Amino acid sequence: KRIFILTFFVSMAQAQEKKTFFGLQYKPIVPAAYFDAANISAKWDSFQFNLSPRYSYSLGMVVRRELNRTFSFETGINYIDRNYRLNTSNSTINLNDFTDFSLRSYEIPYQILTNVRVSDNVYLNVAFGTSHNIFASDVYSEGEADYIFIQNTLRRRRIQMAMLANIGAEFRTVKNGILYVGASLHRPWDEVGRVYPEYDNFNESAPSVDANFLEVPGNFVTIDFRYFFHE
Image (cartoon, rainbow, N blue to C red; front, side, top):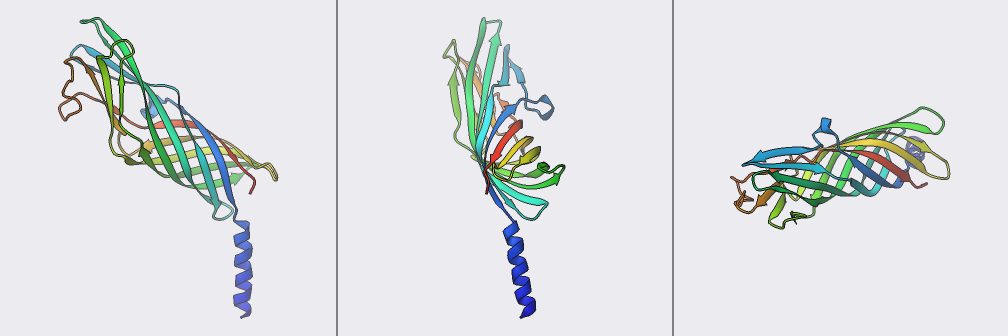
């Protein structure tokens, strides 16, 4: 009985040390050629196409649950808005046009985080995990100058998986919560979608197996800003 009572109180004390934090985060997306997240170009039948990322971001909430003094588990939900511009040109028919469109999705991450204390209030963090990404819909848009130029972006699947990696530093206060700055890599297992450009009779069979398309890789790097409220 004494051993049981002692074990019970030790377990309660350890459980009380494990904290749960709720936070908000904003993550601008940075185009990075090293991770295949920059411009994509293709040329077919005198048509030149260039798919370039525009200003994009991720916004959401984070829940962190401490597992022990070293490791924590993080999850939450994020809204991701990725914006693109598809430029086209054809000197034969004097074509020079573009169309803007957005690929929106929701992300549910699962990460294991480890931290190292470097001063009284500063911790360095490294996290690794996966995420479920739910894509809202396929996307259609028309050219800015000529409505004959169109594009259809088809998502590969509604729900797709991705690998997550993160590194950062946070400043912990006793009463004012936690301030965090870091960077993350989001890398899906495969491309997230395909862009099918069309103009008049060019690529009129799109979307089909034989049609021309540009792959949207889905890789991106973010700069992370987080704020965790005091427990």
